[in-house]
Image (cartoon, rainbow, N blue to C red; front, top):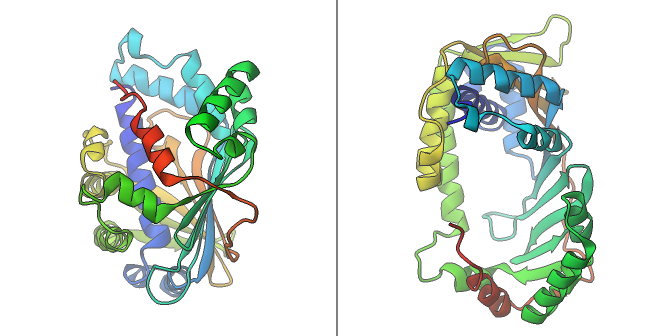
Length: 336
């Protein structure tokens, strides 16, 4: 598999970053500087509203060079080597970002609201909101299609076909909001398949993340940057972080988790950067290039943390009939 070591290292880093940044309220208190990290973790976990923007920082050329360097180390076959198309995808990822936000209601999860917004290769406007059992979606379909090389005539033909199959779906192609009753759609898609309830899924995720946080932070060191009081550096082990990432993948992703790299990265210190301002987490980074011997520069997965805002249902959304949508989805060809 291409660049197994880099993928394994990225898995370890992403796991460590996620667990330390969001799940360490109890475990972090024993580390230095213990008070600030403990309070920041508790503040974040108890927030009624919060948002997180995820993106890559640095230069795409540095990541491409690191991948090619790793291919030499791995002895990657010529047919599997990183090519021009792969380089294009890397640059598109650097030009993209994802923002996830939540707005908690009262006790329980029934009135919680969430939002996902994406900038895809510089094209803004893709957004999904879940409010009161309804899923709202909008996307600049025409702009995205043009960005990735589709012809306007082809997009128009697909729009017409979609509108004939699922009434109201043409609004999505026009960049407008559409809505779907998420309960009805879930019932049609999985009521007979034993699909777990969202609350049960959330409880399982919290349980597994807490276990991994305990395992990962055992023995980690935490120090403050002498040049920046807001900057805190956490150092753990790549093997420990990778092991927890693989365990989480196997537990939470099932068969999909089995597709992830099984070879652990070379054991070395793994450094994570956290920023805390006035008792609140503001950002976190993990440098992916620390997993590749001989790599230069810095390419980091960065998470910026915001205080969050109320999430409300958009006005003027076109309601999509769930039965028509489910029928159209069932008629799609199965990928080979």
